[in-house]
Length: 498
Image (cartoon, rainbow, N blue to C red; front, side, top):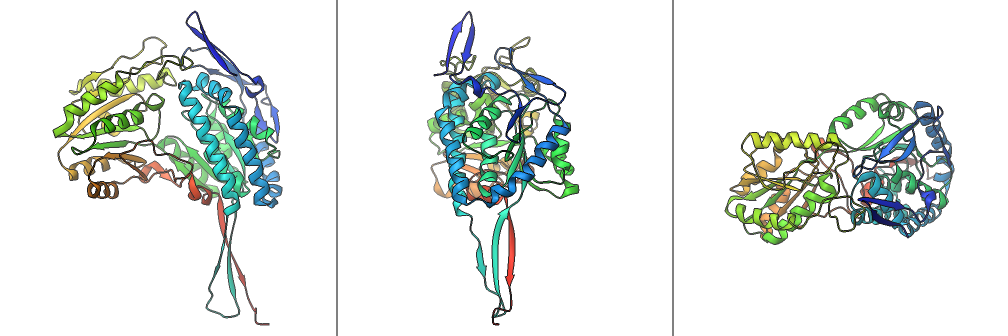
């Protein structure tokens, strides 16, 4: 069993299965170094210590991975859905059998607490299990023709070689949500992990290898120079689809790079999620839900609460309830089981968030709880509540990506809807009310791809995940997530009367 123990203020860590700590690229079924032997360090954000030196590949290795994926996909697509499903089911089983080791790897490279890392690992496995079953449910159609001697058949076939570029905040879930459906339908994939957190992806891939996934179907190309590897993934004509999770700015750039080869795209981009709390809401439930969303993974979540909007008649009461929840938190190294919230991913992330908070305070905001930022090389930020904020402040428009909860006031339902929609983003939104009519009106009136009503933990392998406007295009999860990796082909059978 994986274990952590505190010694002189440091939490030592070990793995039951040390072979899960993979520090090489995975190309055509083999673990390989970069051609030039280059590596880059992977840091523990809680301590600043180097935990591994990762292979740093370039365009040539990425090209070989793409070519291997092209060769491998044909035999994989020719297998029966049951055969593909069986391999994915075995992968799911191995993920669940190794939850503790995978959680330790995630915590030491990403910083989230062990409880959240365990939860993400199980969540990741749920996508592999879901898509393993969906492999058996890819259907077509027989469509009526105007001619009596013709039949129109619609079949769906795998897109081909897919490229995935994933973020650091959910390092295993993002691979599962992309590789799961791609492999289920008969595609192959080349994935670029984030340089901050590559070890979770390589550990998952080691388990996919053990599950019997044929060589070349899943390739991992870690790099500290995303621009070079990203360009190869976007511009190589063999790649027929790119799936990306990350910032809107980077998503737009990748879209431009894919234009010349007209790749299929799935983009899950930035968010600016509102939580709307009406005066008829259960305030304890609303405060608990808003806190769970806002402070999960220390606020480093694309669908976390970014703007908490509270009806003016209950504003003060809600703030007090939220303060009670925040008062139970403990900040520290995620390897400490008593800690509830870990560090931010980098010092730059801390400084970017501090700029937003300083701007709000300079323009009249007040700190109701927290507000302390670590000094020196620290990545720790106290979970913070800001009051007296308004929509003229930067913090209203920009994605915070940290444990800062700005609380805004509104008076009417119409004003709440207008405030929620006053953003170029449209990923997730939440509302709390006991009025069913209001819940329908507001949920339909706000421009978001996902809306939680009296609930903020909404993601599931069973449900479509994605946004509108500049929060992206396409969906992950559910049968909609399968559709993203399939092409529709029409077959016309004619002269059947002969």
